[in-house]
Image 1 (cartoon, rainbow, N blue to C red):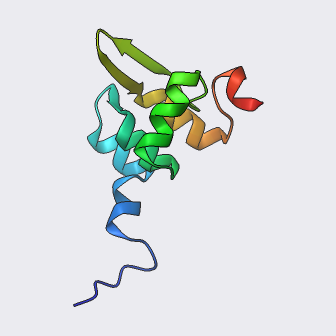
Image 2 (cartoon, rainbow, N blue to C red):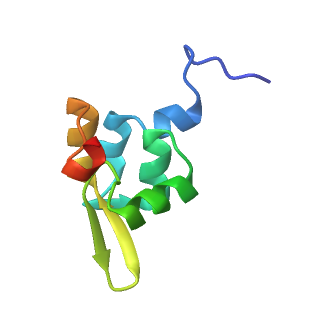
Length: 87
């Protein structure tokens, strides 16, 4: 049965700013942040590697995390937080 929810899918709701504020900690995964921005996991990691991910990224050992506050600021302003990403 189709779940009608005013044109938004469960995936859209999962990556809405209000849901992110309520459920994410200080950082999120590159995969989740990429989906929130609307691109694939592979594209997200490619942007991280090139230093062009639209919000702040932390590399902690072998782990790469996206700063939740930075992601939300980018959503609010529509402007990336890195000057490289504006090119």
